[in-house]
Amino acid sequence: MAETLGVEGRGRFYEEVAVIRDVVQNHMLEIIALLTMEAPISRDPDGLRSEKQQAFRAMRPLAPRDAVCGQFRGYRNEKGVAPDSQVATFSAMKLYIDTWRWADIPSYIRAGKRLPVTATEVLVQLKRPPQAVFDPVTQGEANYLRFRLSPNVSISLGARTKTTGEAMVGEAVELVVQETPGDEMTPYERLLGNAIRGDATLFVRQNSVEAAWSVVDPILGDAMPVHEYEPNTWGPAEAEQIVASDVGWHNPALVQETTKGAAK
Image (cartoon, rainbow, N blue to C red; front, top):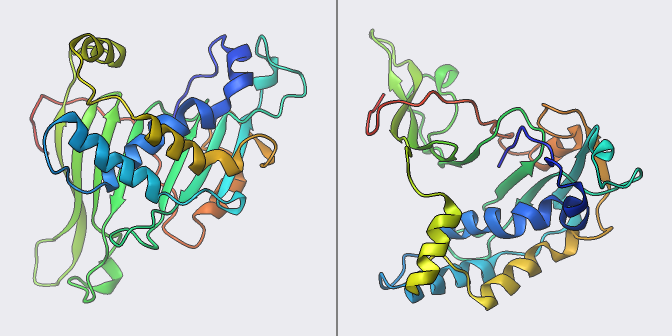
């Protein structure tokens, strides 16, 4: 999750919650659970919530070495913020899920205020095949699936196709099926509507909430140093060490909305 906005006059509130309590423990871990859970055995709310519970329980508690916190320059000038505040407005972390399917496969989370774009996006990088199809020089990045959850909604498949000519040279392409939300209900309208109807699908069980808190608990409070970063950047330089030995961070880009259902 990336945001261009600051705390928008909520300085006093943010001093109490910070970024991990604000969006990581709930929104970000919920997305990870939905991506990594097994298929529900039924379509009823209990089937979905049971599988999410298993995903939360399988998340390994975060170690301080696998997380970096930051605060954008100028946060301390916000109304209600302490002049010496050490509250984090940015967090990056490496998360492991201890199941047979996801063992030793890292999931990376990055969320913060005053970043270059406002977006919630997931990139799932696929494992490379053992044999290169194209010329190794042009093999490029691995194939991927990209889920843009906001501000617009899209699902994309990134792959490589053969260029014209005899040589086996590949070029990157992205096939996009994009849905423009239009006049849909806001998230809170949907939640309130489900609550009125007694539909528990979008609500998390108490034991799932407790499991999610156990994941982030080791890095709450004063457990982590807070590094300063400039507004409109992707966080402090220290965040690069989280992915230094792997694939590097994926930076969401502004996307032009297209006609609903269009592919490009």
